[in-house]
Image (cartoon, rainbow, N blue to C red; front, side):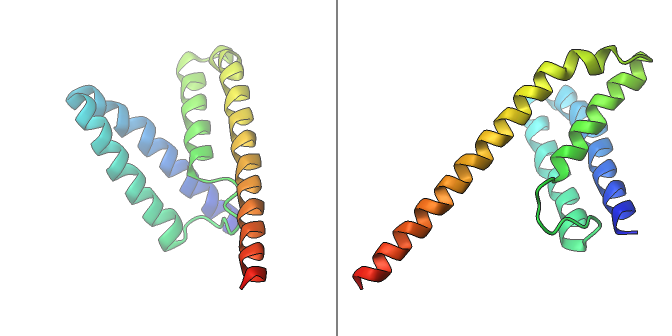
Length: 124
């Protein structure tokens, strides 16, 4: 049941973003986009994380994955073919590489901060 809850939480986030964000940004421009970002992501974070719809203790994949899958698959379903999915592969590869780079840098920062804390502890 936890997996089903997580899938539903990710899917709701993706559908909400894909249906509302573009409409608000299109109708109200820059301010509509910022408003959509604040409202949609805040509500979905509250439901998924605070209420606990998703079961994601390690937070290795978060709402962005559900939003990305929903956005990609929406275009596939609208086109009625896999062409949009194939055309999105270069972007997906770059996004994955960026995520990996961010993860590696975060680990390097954590190790450096731990080393610095250890050195300051030894000095005291």
